[in-house]
Length: 197
Image (tube, rainbow, N blue to C red; front, top):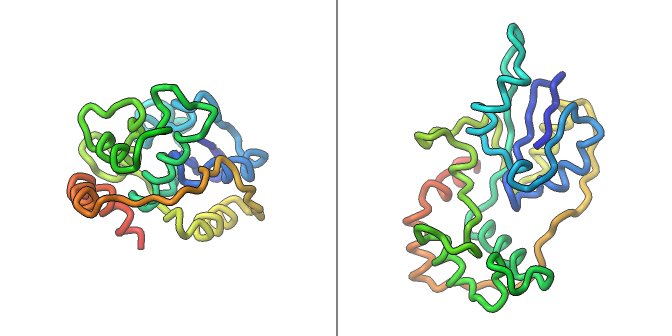
């Protein structure tokens, strides 16, 4: 999460959406940053609004706006799956090594999720407790250039994004019946992404 106090803007870091690269490019321009540990770096919109915004939004100043990047849900899940299959975490309870993509998605749809599939939901990341979107500026990961253009204009900077935290490539296929179930049960996530088109 990066805070740009003078520009009254906060970049919320939705996991697996290119925010690590944005953070690397923008860190020199930020007034405050939470980069680690991961559960603090990935501050949700709700946590920002309830816990951190009052610290930065001094009495008499205008509210700080938030922005985030959202990825197509199936692609986002695929990125998580591949990321958790990397050799350095093999054998841990978060590893997907030896687990098929279908099993990962089924795990993500379970309640509670097994540890290897506990990655959150983008729709919840950007919403309040009632499911209302509370992020001011949302951009598609697939059109990251629009987010970059917004940031360049808002912060009066030129950005050159490095490639960071990229998941390993691997072919993924999902059983059609499971994909239909995913689209039903994660309808809020698909709807959110589609609305950004």
